[in-house]
Length: 327
Ligand SMILES: [Zn+2]
Image 1 (cartoon, protein in one colour):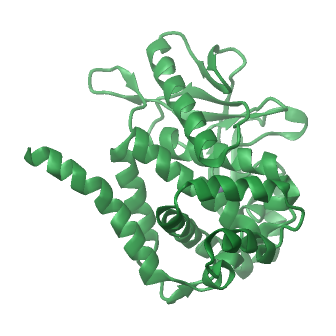
Image 2 (image 1 turned 30 degrees about the vertical axis):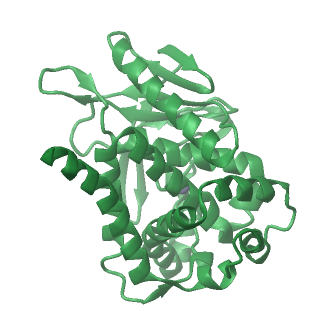
């Protein structure tokens, strides 16, 4: 997911400035967590300023619930993970930069302001969805190893980013159905303009390695050069990137629905113990558990079927709400 989390070299923060990506200047400002108050429980922590104690407690509850859902679903214990509350942001303001400690990440989550002037973060897709997504990714990367899931093995994005999408869907649905609906409709609309009929999940690549200003290596001139070099290729990956989130969510949702969520836990357990991390071998794990030809299926996922799966997920949330309203 393309979100701003920028850590400067040697852990120092960037100075305020702007980064140019594809000719668009993106302003950045630095945000600090070292001088904030801290609340923590389990491996979750919240940094906040005076006056926002109630909101920090609420955010901590959400983060702890997300930690629990990830652990229950994947059987992996999420490592330390923090957020710093900031804002409220002004319209069109870009995400701030957080300087992270060396061993774990801290994300910035903006507060909203209610009409009564009270700060709030309720129903924030970032708090419920994105934080679970990122934390799942970190947990999986930690367990499988960076070279297995991301850096040297980019064809496994459907696992790292895919399971992260599924977990984000699950926490949203559990903790904030209204947010879940918004997220699902957003993902579903990603597929509207797809002109092809089938999607190869196994070639889904991250554009973020080509768009490093967004992802954590703060060397602007290097990034500019790389972008220029990549040209159309970067554009291609950036374009299919959005489809991949929706397609992998549909894949894992369907998979968990048909085989039960315990299969995910079993799969992740075997994945972390396995040395062959080719897609063929990884699909083999799922094939042994389900007697389905996952390898072939993943290379040609029918887009209409994926749309149907997401439509069903949307109606699973909308229908009970309608039934409640009638009673
Ligand atoms: Zn991601």
